[in-house]
Image 1: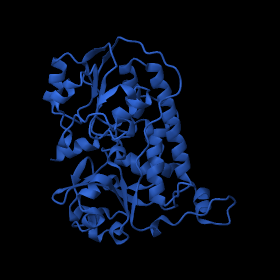
Image 2: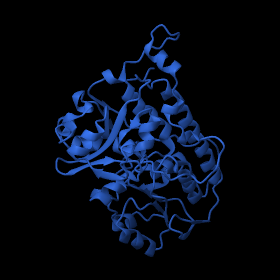
Image 3: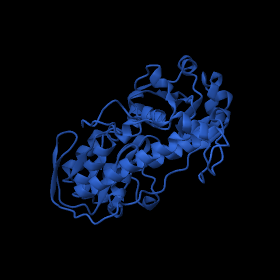
Length: 371
């Protein structure tokens, strides 16, 4: 069970300790947290109505109560520009398989988080997607057949019936036998890195572009994404209090025993730290995914709990979550302070990472969309 839940984390925003492998004199936008970017002046501007500017002061985030639901993202905007596609292209995938792609007319982009389909759309090939995982919730894919069952299991027969010319996937979905069956049928199957982290975000975008035969579009999308992340971090820095909130990301499903704390290598650290909060699980040395029992939750005692919207609904809402052992004695419970993030955007990152950070930060700090 723990391994299966850990796979959820690998879908994006669960930012591990892996780096891009590039050496630079200055930290990248993806590596610079909001808490590092915030300064005293911006905090004073947030709290002091006398500071010049039309914006009203923000509330003290520790005074906020209740559930804040993060709105789902709109579909990604395709990258601007005319980029020539060069096919056939031969790539070496994440598992060192050499795969030749000759046709991208009928694509499946399948992973646990839905990040791959959003990347394909952002590269301008959304109209070629003919099947999707249950995590790909983009509006333009609403009528596209779902080829995954519960727990994100691939239905090889359903996929074959769609006559795909290219399958892009990673090991966050399975079973492995289904992917082998697709490969044996002659369909090009390209496996990408299952570690969805902010550090690996640019490399993953470029990898998908290379698979599609549009490397220049990938470079442009990487540049746009990194610029949006930098702008998001700069915007959020003005909302961060002088004493950052402590936060923990809890994964819950149903009303029984599926209840976990996400630690430092799941991507949650990057999400939490880049919206200016402290990842209290990481600070306490939690790595990977551990059971959220009463003892561990009391040790963490977060100001705020982050969780997935679908998980919150499955456990009978806020009352169900807050009644679990250990949660009831936390600071977050006393103020019922929960940030509910749509499942498909919570840890997927991808080309809309900047939008994700701003949306979560708005919910965390009570910032209205008009501000």
